[in-house]
Length: 341
Ligand code: FAD
Ligand code: EPU
Picture 1 (cartoon, rainbow, N blue to C red):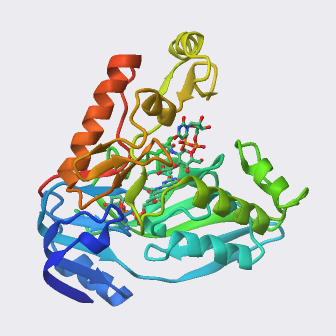
Picture 2 (cartoon, helix red, strand yellow):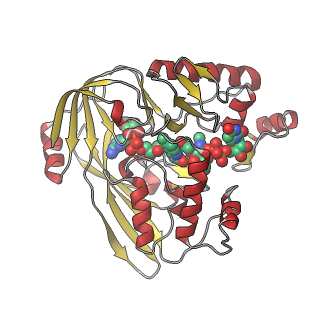
């Protein structure tokens, strides 16, 4: 276990904004977890669990402890004819887990290639991309109840998964340290190519009937082209969720703005493209202090020039107000915002 006092968090968040923590506690083994469970009193009003920091914005310092769960390990649990259950410890890198699953001849999470972050954070917001969500393959989540110190097992149906949401991000925020996840993957591959752009990317690669690995490669290429690289321009991916509205509102907007992308979810609801709403308000590429809206993707706020967390928040607020004013749509933030704890 590593302990550091008065630690900078700048290299532990993909926005690369400066913030300080009184203490950094890095759990590296099951023994460390055992110690943490029985000896450490986690206080969610001062302490914070951090993964790879790719979905968080620090707008203040942490007066308590930042806990990093870096325990790694992954294996196949059961292997029947087609369905294979795998388990990964929370400290595994998500993208490396996807590549490992492909190496085992397994499919199911290839569309989630190149999402930054650790496996332990994946259930938090039910990571999703290119027509697939974690919830589609997740079997269960093992988590430590930070209050009762009990280890709990949540089956997928008990995680309350929704679009970019789960019980861990909403009703139970700050209560659990996720320790392991289990996924149900397939040996027989069924490609999921409905999301706009995947088919075209595969065609450009000269592939008609793709393997799971080729779908992964196509998605990696798409993502590298569309999204700014956090190593060059600090960012946390999409800063806002795509708004979910009722069908009547979606139809009214579509009548007025015919090129607005609208994705029907069911008979009653549809998702709108937040990127389109933001770009239509003229924000793409716009700078405010050290913060900016990426000129590559309007939904991504970037740390352009030594931005503070508060500068990024001010830009986000200005965007939210203008989208509200023009379209009467309220944008919701996707990353966790941490004010001083
Ligand atoms: P962190 O940012 O460290 O933490 C996020 C939240 O989870 C925090 O509230 C933290 O307290 C909590 N947390 C982390 N680990 C644990 C744990 N073990 N136990 C309990 N709580 C924990 N997301 C998508 O869904 N789809 C995308 O396509 C996507 N693309 C992205 C592209 C870029 C360039 C970037 C920078 C981000 C993108 N994201 C995307 C967001 C991000 O990658 C995911 O949300 C990811 O799961 C965050 O993982 P992390 O380890 O960095 O979590
Ligand atoms: N668009 C614009 N301007 C832009 C970019 C996009 O108008 O600058 C419009 C285009 O019409 C495009 C549409 O928005 O067709 C959708 O764009 P894209 O395919 O890039 O997807 P998104 O809705 O912007 C969502 C997720 C991403 C995920 C991609 C791919 C959310 C909030 N974001 O973005 O997730 O990778 O789909 O599935 O749901 C993240 O959560 O951090 C993230 C990056």
